[in-house]
Image (spheres, rainbow, N blue to C red):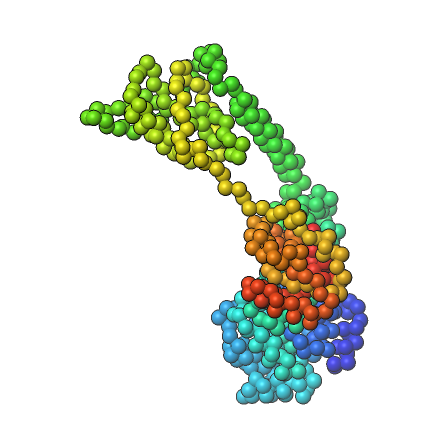
Length: 490
């Protein structure tokens, strides 16, 4: 039986037609053949990795249904409550049901009996990212100690990165990476789905526009394509109105922007314009000042208005300082200074309440502008930290100039450009050996931080000892895999 399994593994596309349909493409069928080959010939743990919805669980399901290698197939879902002893107990109970002759045996004795019969015990753990830290290490060590046992983990890229820091055996596993569909494969997949009895779309409805839309929205991930199907039933009927609505919205947005730009260009001191406008439009924004007491008298400023003022070159645009409309009235120096301070407080509150755009109001005739306070003169915007000119773009060209059989160190995966900026600026002393790649993982923007280029895995591993403590868990990666990841992610 083992010889038959070996022959099947060396025969391309020996799967039944339903299995090939589940795997979608010939390339994925080849991944399945590789999985069989590794199960038969190696007891090193396997990792099936790829973004959520890419088909990792489907691959494991086809493996369990097809049973290409003679043995027992145990499927478990990852759970943070599982520990090594609990998994061993589940395996022991599973073998008692599958192999009655193992009843009453310890797990080690049951696996030894399976080995004598030339069988394999294949443990598949889906969503292995949920496992507690260190458990992958424990299971990998147990598998290496028991030649009949095979362990397969399913992980997303993010989970793989996290586990590589907590479970060092991850880097010694065999990897089977599931890649997104191409646009052509996306069309074939939609057409295959349309043939199902309950499909919301027909074969003829799969048009170029639909394929382009689905590919753009899902990035070729089969799980996302299936989730998109219910919205495709009226695609052609609703496509034109939706596109028209988007175009109309764009025109309205442009018109609005043009109006706002014209409004901002209205002269600030045109008294003739102010007097020609209707009374309702000449009203200024009135903000009463707080009541203050001086020598037993109450003084209330009449009104405060805002004007558009040009700020210093370092600042963008702010709401102009309020002015006090004081007509034909004499106040002493002490009172005037107090009113100025009160106006500055009101200016700050108005500015904070309307951060998105300036308030434009006609000038009040005979209004006396309030001089800026010392605090306002000293206002400066804090410059945002940016990458230097040599870091303005990612190091994609550097990546593809590296030899595919060389290695690098993956230090971390970050979710924002500013985080990468902070790390690069923090470790400037690492100079040109520190690189980063901008890519998409699971449909989300990610930034992969790399360090160095090494001709061997051992050299890369030794280099981790010279890195700062934050990077001691660096993951040694082959350039061929990284180049393929970046190429297929864009």
